[in-house]
Structure formats: C-alpha cells, structure tokens
Amino acid sequence: MSTGVYGIVRGADVRPSDIQIKVFYSQNRESGISNTFTLNSNNLTNVANDDLGIDVLNGLYNLKLPVNDFKSKGIYTIVIKPVEIKATIVDCGVLTGLPDVKGIVLDSADPNLAAFTDKLENNGLIGYRVEFLDPINPALKVRNLFRIVTSNNRVEPVTQNLTNSNQKAIRYRFNDNSTLVFCTVTPNAPTNVKPDVFPYIGQPNQQVILTHTLFNPVTIEVEMVEHDFDTLAIGLFGNQTKSIEDGIYTLYNFNNEIYEQYNLFEIKSQFTGVPLYEVKERRSTIDFNKNFNDIANV
Amino acid sequence: MKVIKRKILLESLTSRVHDSTWGTITAKTINLLVNLEQEIKDLGMLLPQDFIPRGVISEDTGKLVDYQPLINILDANTNFEFIKNPNASSIPSKKEFNYDLRYSDTKTKDYYQNGISISGLTEDRLEEVKTYGFTGDSQFIVGNIVDTIGYYNYKGDAIAGSNLVISNSDFNPIMYGELVNANDTRLDSITPPYVSNGMVYETFRNQQRTVIDEFGSEVIPTTKVYYQGQGMNETNLDMSALTREEYLLYITQPPKVESDVFIERGGSIVLAQHGRFAEINTLEQLERYGNGFYNINKV
Image 1 (tube, chains in turn blue, orange):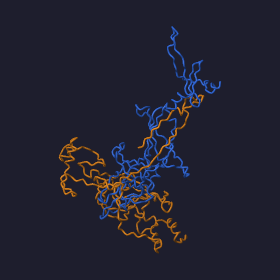
Image 2 (cartoon, chains in turn purple, red; image 1 turned 90 degrees about the vertical axis):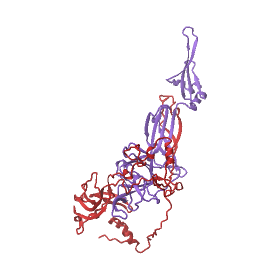
Image 3 (tube, chains in turn purple, green; image 1 turned 30 degrees about the vertical axis):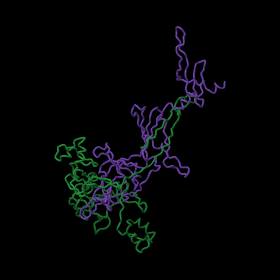
Image 4 (cartoon, chains in turn orange, yellow; image 1 turned 135 degrees about the vertical axis):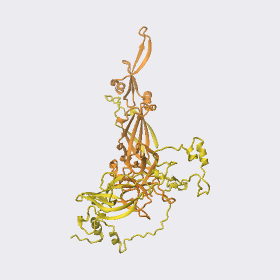
C-alpha cells in the first residue's frame, strides 16, 4: 500500500538542511585519511533558473569550499549525502481499519527527532529509507537491509476486538492530535497469495536510521596541486628578467606580477679560480624592486 | 554513487601582489558546480515462499523434495554437515537471531520480542469512565469500575478489561484506565513499565495544547497515554522466506478488482447535512460548521 508517487531520474531540488557534507583529507595517495570534518551544508546553494524566474534550476548546485579548510596540498574527498535521522521504533503494529497493513511506530516526542518534527507530519516521510541497527549492539548496522516509507500518519493506540474472536489487541487509528507516528513501509503488506504473512520491518526498541531519497549521494574528489599547465606556461612563455648586477633571476606571470625569484651565481675553485658550478637558487625573500613594468620602461 | 574528480591549482588562490601578502593564499572560497539527481527504482512486491523440508512431497510438483543437488554443490567447497544430517552435532551455535536470516534449528517463536513501554499525547477518553446517574465532575468516581469487558490478549491470557478512574487530583491530572486489569500492580505507574494490558490516560484540565485538524486549530486538554506495546508475537510475525516473481518486478501492488459497491454521499440529498452532523465532535466544530448550514443562536 502506498499513498506516495514513485519518481524517475530528475534534477534534485533538495534543501541544504536535508544535506550532509563530509570531507576526508589525505596528503597523498599513499597515506590514509589524516583529517575528517563536516562542511556546513549552507555552502551548497541552488543555481537560479533565470528562464522561469525562479530560484531553483533543478539539479545544479554551487558548492562553496572555504579556502581556510581547503588550502593544503593533497586530496580532499567530499561526500554529499542525504542527512540521516536516528530514531527508535517504539512499536510495530497494524491499523484498526486495515489490519493487513503493518507499520512501524515512531514517537515524535523523541528528543533525537526534535530537529525533524516537520518531517514527521502526515506523509512527510514518504520515500524515506529505513535502515536498521543491530538490536543488541546499536553501534552495528544491519547491512543490506532497508525498507522504504510509503506513508506516515499520526495515530493513537486503541484496544480493539480481533476478527472472529473475543480477543483484543492494540491497534492504531489515525489521530492527528497524537505524538505517535505510524509509518507504512514497503514491503509491509502481505500479498494476496498468502495474506497472513508479514515481511520484517523492524522490532520495538530497535534503532533505525531514516534517510530521505531526494537525491543520490555524490562524491567529489578535489586534488589541490601546486603545478599544472598554467604554471609550466609561466616558466616557458612568461616574461623574465635577469639582473646582471646582483644575479636575481625573476619569472613573471601573465599579469607581469612576480611569480618566482632565483639567485644566479657561480661557484669557483678557491685555489685556481676556475668556475665549478652555475647555481640557480630559489629566493625565500622577494625583491619587489624587480617589478617588470619598471624594468621594461627604463 | 557518482564520483567527480577535479584538480584545483593552489597558484590560482595565491596572491602575487607586490606587498606583504605575496605568496600567501588570499582567496576566500572555491566554487564548484555540482549536479544532484534523484533516482528511484522500486523493484516491486515481494511474495512469501514456504520452506518445504526434505522428504515432503511438494504440492506443486507432486514429487519428493530432494535437496541433494544443492548439498552436492555446497559440499564441493565446504562441509555442510548440518544440512545432510539432521542429527549432526555441528549445528551452528548462536545466541541472538537476526531477523533477516533463517536458522535451521529455530522456530518462529524464537524470534518473539516483548513490547516496550510507550507513552505519548492524545485526546482524552473521559467519556469511557463516566458513571451514569451523576452530573458534572461527580461522574468521575475513583475506583468505580464503570464497565468490564472480558477478552483474551494477544498472548491468549484472559483479561477482565475494566474502565475506571484510577486517581483524581482535582483533574490535574485525572488518571483513568481503559480495558485494563483493575488488579494490575502497575495501574498507576507513569514510569516504565506501564500497565500490561489496556491503556492508562492522564488528563490535565489546566494544561492545554493547540492541535490542528481539518477544521482549523483547536485547544484541547493535555492527555497523556501510557501502555505496553505488544512487540513481536504470533499475531504479527512470520518468518517465511520472501521472493520476487520476475513477472511482478517493478509492480508494487497487483491489479485488484473492488467488488464492493460504493455509493457516494451526494451533497444534494436531503439528509446530507444531517449525516455530516454526526462527524462533529466539539462545540467549536459545531459553530464553524453550523454557521454554514444552521442558524446558531447564542444565548
């Protein structure tokens, strides 16, 4: 049973608050991850759709990386993924009106869900993925097992007669004034082939991770490098000067700004005076008097 | 997951202005354009598949079920003694049961779990504990069992379900139970574990909260509910294997013919407004609804 609509591949228009950005840094390919941090998801903003005059061009986002966090040479692996909500199943039950529809019950008053109360309103969780943590050791995830939420509604518990017997059982019925949230998941309903069989959807007191499916996770590998063709071109094609008097050799970028400076000198034999080496040594302090425009205009 | 690879030149972030900033990174941000896509693929419905033990005649084929070919394949790589020999001592040992796995020597009841104590906010159920013959607040008599309904709970235990007021602190709160065992030692407990059967409510007349329904916002007394969930038991747990039929892939629900006759309650019939009247629960709803159809005189 589903009250939602399944989609196709589309450009996402998810809010930054629904996104989590994790960054993993390693100095080179040999070493492992040396630094991990979370980037504020507000750094990911929609590009506007000027054609329609609206603020969202579906799918296209501008990711701003603060240089303070990305100034080291090395490899930054950025994972953009849906935000994850950790919750606890308080009960698994069925609806009074539809006893063949089984679901999980969450409590919206759970402090862990305080930041996500808007998602817990009726049908706000449709399409969310439910992944399960180990009931015994919640630090472990039950791998390769997930369900998709197909509807969620506020419910209250009622004690109801079971069909064809004088048994009573707790069932849930819709009541928007309740704090309990009944989520149907797929698969949750027995098939008409065997109507008394329910698939596993979790158990009371089990922790689950709710994740929306509003976009597919993306990994961006940003490699910060010191040199590429541009810097090589400066060395090959950029302006250069060599000061004869003090031996300062200067390379200029294409804006005629000083890119690098070197000292040029010879090493001679102290006994014979014969030149032994010609040396080009990178200067740590820059002589700004070697401004190219001043020199060229002399 | 899509992986995008980019190289960014540190030189492009570095100042080459002829002052003290030369050679330092002065850029504030790096901008990358990223495309995010949403993709949903639902494989469709699952079908339960009964496990047919070895030595049983299959209803489908009419033949004796024999897993020998499978055993031969498995045995080619490792020793699956417990499959070949039901009396083997090498049955895998375990303490906890993973709901996604089936263990050869377990029964469904091994997976049963007790429910936990649950509390929440809801609407009051004071109507269920009023004593006839009284008016106003005197209708709520502490300890007086208003109604008793016998039933069996999900475990099969016989319960004398009672509706009664448990305690009353001048309605702040009034505590009452619905279909509870009047002798339950946890009857007045608002700390877990709660009452074993039925539900206990606490209504606070002086504490109110605003709720929103289809009629708009409404202020109702705060009512807390306490009960014990039923966990996993024989009424809601079955460990049959689940399979997908290839012809049903991407179909989430098979086509179904509704044979019931459904008659729409038209807006033009004479009794329509009167029929809708029954759906109004509070005076505020009556005022809002009634002003469209009835003339309400306030005196």
